[in-house]
Length: 558
Image (cartoon, rainbow, N blue to C red; front, side, top):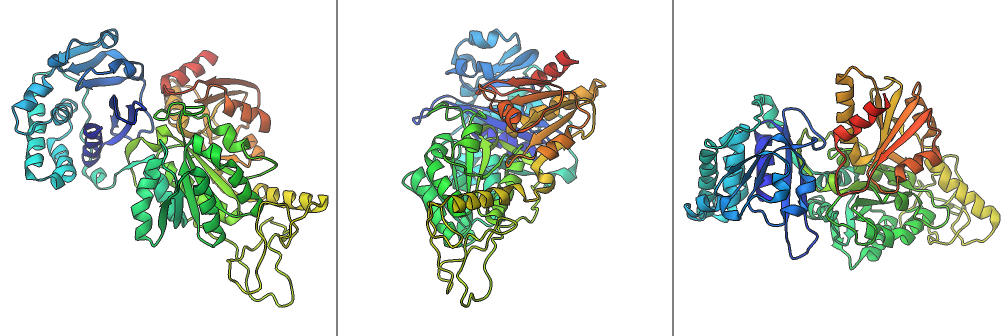
């Protein structure tokens, strides 16, 4: 992981774009680990169909990774001869192979490390300038002292020197100097944290859970810089109730979790909806159900995010469609939650959240939490916290405002907040809570559309499968075909008129998602009228959906 992260950052310094996912076991005690990188002179949002270079510092538990590392005969596999014979799973891939004695070279250097030997060798093989690698090594390890830094630098140089005797690998062209100053190294979880604070979040309560914990790790120090605070609650139930309380008190608030935590939070999310208290929940999905596969990605929390609340509880569900979009989508969700005074769920996943990439700095769209507040003194009029307004949004007072006291709880209520079991009050408040979501103008942000009006075939997708869909469509167009993509960012409330317009002229629809039960396909069928013939391409995690698989789905249909 360390070598992979350094390779990514060095690529960024060299002006290359890089995308890295990680694969590891779910054992708390530690275990197997792999860093999987894609490097390019152009932005990338997902892995390609295969890897060109596999470097095994050791062969321990390699069988657990073999299905995740597709390779072709042109690929190159490097392994330490002192680490045993090349495993059958690797030999079966039919790739070229070569030996590199990581441990032996490391022993010749005082304090030498095999992973730094590997870093130097890989950099030399792919054409990554040594100065970029050494800069990252210095930035990362200087605090460990001069001896550790010198050992790592010597290891990198030794690995690079040995690479001259290895078979050739694919190399990248040098990037222009202007690119080197503008790339960020960031994960999707870090980007979500950035979007949260940009949106105005100043209080976070959460309980750590894989793979959402990094959202909290990034927010803890950065909230403090802005005068905010993060509290580690005793569990997910406490965390969601704490952010409801903080939001009721006037502070824009958020929590982050994964599927098991979201399941525990659903009752209290309903409280936020009924009391019209704005909160944002970032849910970084993982393989399920139950404890499932904590360290692998899947888009299988869609149903619980959309339908998991009891009663009729309209709320917002927003899904980032790229690592960089985790910043925008979280910021937008915070803005919407406060504007519409409801709960917003951000559906990220492990593939987005824990991947790291070098990207152009995400732009700040200027969307901020902007809650409607009452103005002036009431006089003899009683404060109607839940007044049935045309927009459905009614002014929300901060506790302590003279004359603006009201009851806020989970019971159905009148306009002033008094609990009521009357049918008329129930219908009025249900209509109000739904109307404010359906009547709001979400503008162009509801979806990302690629190839608008192009061809008669469309691919509809969401979340982390957007990247491979876009790349498949690029290949489709390169083959002389036409097609368009609709990646839906706003999953709730649904936007049937907007999707109908985006699909005008389409007679074939391919739905792509990463879930066993085709949850997204069924969601589309339930809420939208899809034109013409519809096919669903879906499978569960942990294996990612790759561009060639989508391209072949399109080709088989042409």
